[in-house]
Length: 168
Image (tube, rainbow, N blue to C red; front, side, top):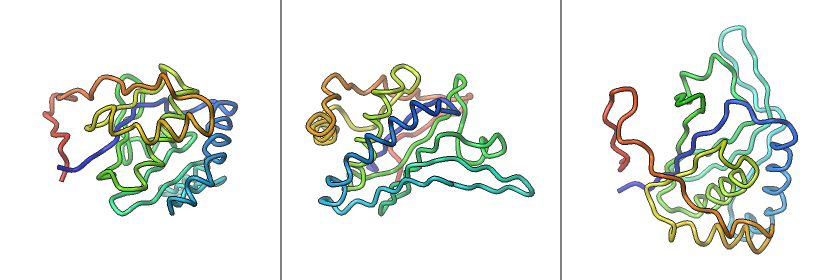
């Protein structure tokens, strides 16, 4: 069974909130280095479709099974390529297979949940126990995260299509 993290978030995150998320993620750089996890802060994440260009800030973690990208915003014309909209939130997921880079993904999502509260839904095909190490990193280094809990599991059916969450 493949292990994935899932999140539903606003298409655009307010500057002050996104800056706070980036600041806290950056404070964990010693943890990322110790665990040999590459976490990048891109100030000009650029997407191009045809003649349209869109620049935004972004947090990127690259791992063996996928790339986690947490941009401040996504351009309108990329909505249908990279994300699915559910109740006005963009849905994303990344396959981590509980690899070391998954630790950074989980910590970043805990940080995002701290600042976005109910604006972001964070879930996984794992359970609370699988998030304990990331939760402890955030608690020990940033002083919050003790109350973080995974939100309800993703729906089994979206837009009339049956979904299988045990991705291979």
